[in-house]
Every structure is written in structure tokens, then in C-alpha cells.
Length: 319
Image 1 (cartoon, rainbow, N blue to C red):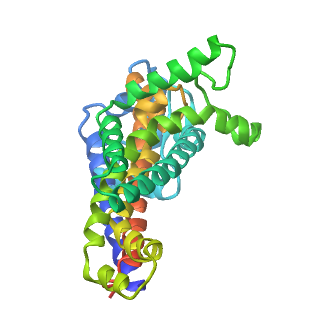
Image 2: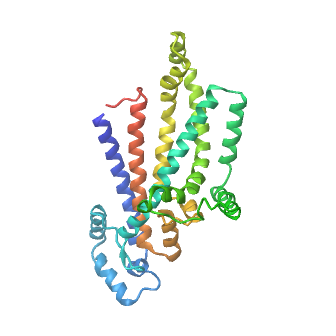
Image 3: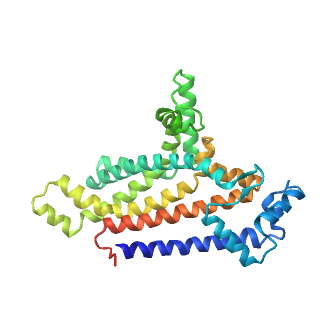
């Protein structure tokens, strides 16, 4: 298991190195005037001179790259010259919002997707199976921004007009304001993400469960007189979860990297909305920092997926 984990971490480090190289070439080598590009269109000559001095742009390219990687490893992702604050400060303010959104939605879509997928698989071609299939296809084909707008219209606007202001229009309340207030501001964004993703997991879990329930070891377990619920829970669900775990790690890593549409619709100041604002303002230091953070999130998520896959599936060799 240790050798397996070391190999996965080493592969992840290679991927991160390639990403840092690509980001450096794109933002620090390709532009004709790197300092002006990073400082923005409204930068004064003093700011441009400060950027040149701070980043050492007069040094050889290889030395600039070494300094770039070294600073990133030490948590220095650059300086936002629009707001005169470090990029790490901006990311640190946005990360709790995105993590709260991603983790809460992930819990909901896992519960919905796995349970409905199992129900659909153990009762194929029944009313329950067809109902789950229709709902999964409905939400799978629905754009995320449309679902968000519909939730705002029916659960915020209409309920508020009726005198039941249960849900807020948007925004974020930190945990310091209380768990209920925090969850109240996030329940609609959670549902907006979870209903769409649960549709994918429902279809994935159903197909995987149908394959597993047809295996010889499942028929053997049934022939031994083991109760059906135990067969499904211990033999069926565990084996069927491997593709779900793979998909979950990728989805969660991507969400933590930034949920652009949902954060924009619900005015959540997370990484996704911060990235959109930075792109609009051409705030390149912030864009670079978010790209590197998102890359780390995706790589870490994939490493955890590989480990979880190996633990769930005994056929995976760990040496």
C-alpha cells in the first residue's frame, strides 16, 4: 500500500510541475511586457517598476522560473496590484465559501445518487426504476444556471411574496454567524449542484449495480441463504461503488477549484466568482493563483480516488 501511495504522489507531483511550467510560459514568457501585463492596464510607471523589481524580471528566464516555483511552494502566489493585497489573502477569503458549497452539495448528491441508483438496480423495469430514470434524465439535461434561477424563483421569490421568507436571495453567511444561518444561505446552491450531479451518479450506480448483481459471487451468496439486504449491502454496493468513487473524486476536486456558474447565480464570493471577476478585470496574478490552487485540488482529489479505489476493489494490486 505504501509503494502504491508513493507512486501516485510522485505522479501527481510530475503533473503539478508540468502545470507550473505551462503557467509560467503562458504568463511570464509569452507577453512582450510581462510587468505591464501582470500589473494591469491601469498600472502607473511606479507600479510597473515595482513589479519588475519584485519578480526579478531582469534575471534569466530559468532563474525566474526557479523563483516562481520556490515562492509557490512557500505559499507566495504573487501580489494583486489592483487591490494591493497578496493573492493568498484573496484565495483564503474565497476558499471557505467554495469548500462549504462543494462539500455540502457532494454529501447531498452522493446520498441521492447512490440510494436512487441502488433502488433502480434492485427493481429493474418497475415503476420505481422508470421514475428514477426519467428524473435523472430530466436533471441531467438541465443547464445548471437554469436550475439555479428556477430555485430562486420558486423557493425565494414566490415564498417571500407569500409571506414565507425562508430562503435568502443569495450571498454567504460564515459559520461564525451560526450553523443554521450558514446552511440557510447555502441550501439553494447545494440543491442546484446536487440535483444535477445526483442524476449522473444515479445512472452510474444503476449500471454498476446491475453488472455486479449478475456476478457469480453474488449468486453464490444468495444460494447460501444470505438475506437479500445483506447481499446487496455487503457484496453489491461495495463492488459497485468503485466507479462512483472515481467520478466523485474528479467532481469534488473540480468543484473545489471553483464553481463558476452556481457562485455567480447565487452571488457567492467563492473561487469561481473570484476567477470570473479577475478575468473581467484582467487581474492576472489572481488568475495565476487560482489556476495553481485548482490544479493542486484536482491532483489531490485524484490521489485520494486512487487510494479509495484500491481499498474498495480487492482486485487492484497495491505492489
